[in-house]
Image (tube, rainbow, N blue to C red; front, side):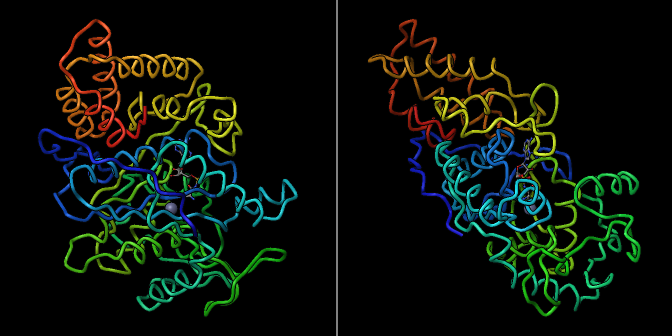
Length: 413
Ligand code: 5CA
Ligand code: ZN
């Protein structure tokens, strides 16, 4: 699938090398430094194309964009892959509810998403892969799991033996009863008669009446959700045999820790004998009026609606970065208003002929980001600089800061 257009990434002018990046790993639950590498491999779970792009989606992709930007500014290359769940039950249900063709719905939402990502200056992945275009790939992965003795049938559907692995649960740290409950809320079917274990997951779903299906060695059907991401990540990120883990970063919103990422990791262990990712990074949930922003609750604010109302995309980006990615947080009008004022103040300072020293503030931004993407701290440093500049402090180079804001924070001001 076509990714969105390239976003210009300036080369940050740094007076000293960037500090090593620390990120909180959901598996160890600790902040850990990313081993220095020339090439990083990052997989981020993409949208299911309906109700895109709400501010929760946007916040999550911004988190990984910050990682991408930081690693590139450190001089490394980032291989970045994202999927699109362009065939799945929720998409079909929405198309049915709204009496539209599911492909038309998906195509329109993917187009909208691409435009929103471009407006927010999110660097595009090199491979943007839809589930539909990965059917053969998924089917091959199911065959490989089958060859490893990890697949069984319930009727014409195929399931993966998750719970057989002693490592299952290492990522989510949940008790089995908790897993079962969350699994049933997030597309699983723990109580299905015929399953060997309630937590085994569907990897190939035989075609249902009036639903699409694709021919495969497993019969006509479609991929299960988790195997879609496992297969796409392992194929398109081209893992290196000599490395301990298949990829460096597996990411998405915190709602994906269980079951999705736990099950992807479980499948990858069987397929490769290795841990899927060195670091599992999860961006916390954005809510509105005290509740998680989600399609099912219908309490969504869309990036495109705000932009159509005349809101500057850089203000949206700034507002989403003004709170830390690991905190569940609320979107509100007051957040947007504060961001509008703060961006205006920074722009006013950047327009001055004499500005406060810039080398130090660039170093502060880098240091804050290196510490688990502390964007509130980075932004506070820029605001303090703007105030110093407005009060007449001098000795800085505007260009040094504008380039750093763009390269590291994605803010083209
Ligand atoms: N297609 C799957 C992933 S393979 C999926 O979860 N799609 S999604 O459209 O529901 O979500 C897309 C991304 O946005 C996921 O990483 C998800 O974790 C994240 N996300 C969804 N809702 C929110 C929210 N309210 N706040 C933050 N991130 C969110
Ligand atoms: Zn995924």
